[in-house]
Every structure is written in C-alpha cells, then in structure tokens.
Length: 288
Image 1 (cartoon, helix red, strand yellow):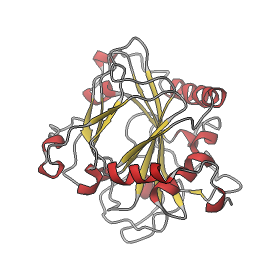
Image 2 (cartoon, one colour; image 1 turned 45 degrees about the horizontal axis):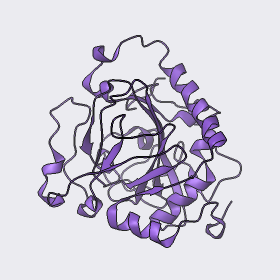
Image 3 (cartoon, one colour; image 1 turned 180 degrees about the vertical axis):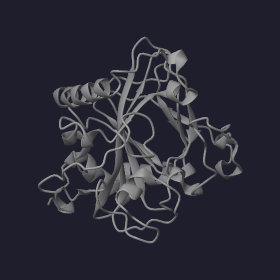
Image 4 (cartoon, one colour; image 1 turned 45 degrees about the vertical axis):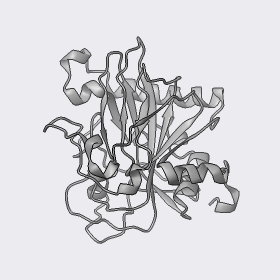
C-alpha cells in the first residue's frame, strides 16, 4: 500500500485551507490531456452500454432524469473505468482534504447532463444517507470545459459549517424545498465555478451546491467519486444500497463488499462485488 508520505499529488497548504474555509476547492491540472481522454472513453462506453435501450427524448423523462443521465458504480461493471475510480492521485487528494490516514469509496457515478437538461436543485449530498457526520468529500471530474451555460456547478461558500440541513428531494417525488433560503446559510449566494478539462472540483458532503441547466448542443460529461473517512459507523437504519449490500447494520463499521479502501492504495485492487445495483438512476435495490 502507498503511504501518506508518498502522495502522488501533494496539495499546497493554501488549497487545503480554502477547502476547509469554503467547503469546496478547485485543483487544476490533475490529469493531462491523453490520460483524461482515456478515462473519458471508458466512462462514455459504459454509459452508452447502460443506456442503450432507452430511446426516450429528454422531454419524455421524469423531472429528475431531465437533470442528468445517472449511472452509478461504474467500476463494478466496467474494467476500463476502474483505473479512474481507484486513481491514486485522486484518493491521495481526498485523504489530504479530509486530513485522515485512510479513505474508502462510497460510490462513483457518471452524471451526463443532456442538451436541454434542466438545472439540478440546490442540496447537500450527505443528508441523503444514514451515515451521520463522517468526513466525506466528492471529486467532480469534467471531461469537457464547463461553464454556467452548459451545466457548471455552484457552491455556497462556508455552507458545510452549518452541518446537516433539511434534505432536499432532488428526485421530485415530493416538492423539493428551497435550501438556499435556510437561515443557517445567512443569505450567502452560491459561487459558480467554471472548470477546464484536467481539473477537478472537490466539495464537502455538507456543502450546499447546485448545477445550471445545459443550454449547449453537447452533453455535459462529468464523472464523480465520493470518498469517506475509514473507521466510521452507520448511524441510522433507513435503507441505502451500499450499506445494505455490505450487510452493515446500525452501529457497525462501514466496510465490506463494495466499500473498499482506496487510500492507502490497495494492491491488488479489489474485485467488483457479486451483487450489483440498477444500471441507471439512484441505486436502491439489486437487479442490474
């Protein structure tokens, strides 16, 4: 295993300080052009494979599906995606931002916002899951240049310090409330972040964020990886696919099948789980 003294990509202290202050940070030039293109090709192929039978146009889809095509845990079904999901540089950055010696994988996912795709409602990620306040960070990896006009993200600076707020139903199965009006945010406005290919945006699990609509003629192709600090326990009993699959009960350590350690880098890399989730959308049951 790789140790913390040999991070492939060392962060400047100022970068870590920005993350802790604002709850998000941009790291530039994480990937070179050829490496990013190789990863993008692998993700593109798996997204195409998983969506090959869906012939609907965007206006025929649910409100949630109009926000993005969502394909989760691609590493489990696509060998070409595994090098990105287990990328040592990314995992090492996650460990540095969280200031922990070991991190595990919560999930990876492709979020492809189609041309004409609607905005993604402002929300916190971590309140979706029964994991309490475990240190958690997401890497947002675009394969193309991203501006507000084609689906950029915006983050409320400092919102992670408010802790867990009322969850937002971004699936629109119920009416989502306006988290930006929560008094805990003190009226702070979201900050839009443009990203060039090769760079990565990181945000805390409690950072309030949203995405703009895609007004361009091309898909906004983004891959995300969510990491959490090793050594924490499940806090609630409501259903969640990764913990239920790994048979993690309330009070037990969050580990097991599908929740591998990614930093320090495992050698060899873990094998995919035997039980898989759904091909598209939020995974809440088995049956791919």
